[in-house]
Amino acid sequence: MDLELRDKAILISGGAAGIGAAISTACAREGAIPVILDRNEDVARRFAEHLSSEGHRCELILLDLKTPEDCRQAVEDALRFCGKIDGLVNNAGVNDSVGLEHGDPERFEHSLHSNLMHYYALAHFALPALKLTTGSIVNIASKVALTGQGNTSGYAAAKGAQLALTREWAVELLPTGIRVNAVIPAEVMTPLYRQWIATFPEPEEKLKSIERRIPFGHRLTTPEEIADAVVFLLSPRSGHTTGQQIHVDGGYVHLDRAL
Ligand code: NAP
Image 1 (tube, rainbow, N blue to C red):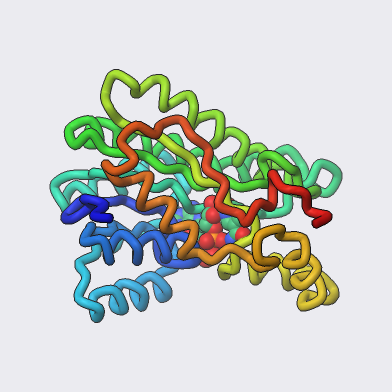
Image 2: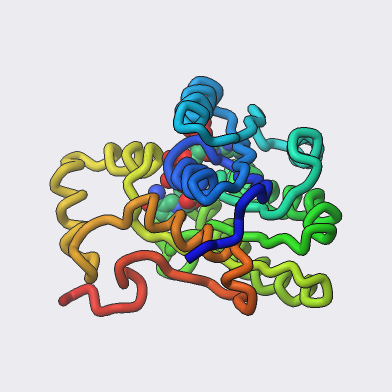
């Protein structure tokens, strides 16, 4: 299927590692121009070089999304590089273990800044450009918004808000033709996931016990499988899909995990 993404400029937050890198790669392979926004300078430069060596065009914005000004700057840079924005993928985030008991209101607020505020700010500042291209927005959320995880109130609140905003923006943007959808991963092997699994006393055993409970194939989802759903949602080929929350998780959230 031709996804009709050739020469489309797609701004991807956290686009240099894990799920974001897979999305950047999938966009590039479809002929789009990933505008990779990431704070991890070494990783991002190496990743951009790798994409270029495969013959793909990509652009790099090295920035830690901390303030609304950072987000405005990122959008300005994307427009300077490409002259337009056809798609925004809000993906950067960190499961930062700010619990109810083992946390405090300041750390909770900080977690919302790390995980939520830049989703809104990037969409807000990119909106005028997205209107000009009738672009598309994809928010990467998490199953934690729906199942909870324990000891991660800030991340869970941010992920829940991302799902609410996906519906809210889809409604607000109906008159513009801009579609807004969310992809909800559950268990995906990435640098962030590797860090999390390493916090358990026996990480290998923990990983096996998680895999056993994933109904489809008893394995983790790959970043590429998340990316394939995202490029479809960015593409005009999903032209009548908006306000949706797509679970790419081997049935983890909805199917009987005892099977
Ligand atoms: P990852 O492996 O940590 O990759 C994310 C990239 O984004 C990293 O390079 C990270 O830099 C960067 N980043 C994070 N916050 C940033 C910020 N404020 N400004 C600029 N760059 C930033 O994470 P991932 O596992 O691919 O997760 C990507 C998204 O998927 C997140 O929204 C996460 O909540 C969601 N998700 C993941 C899973 C999973 O199983 N992996 C499950 C459900 C949902 P640093 O390395 O410096 O942090």
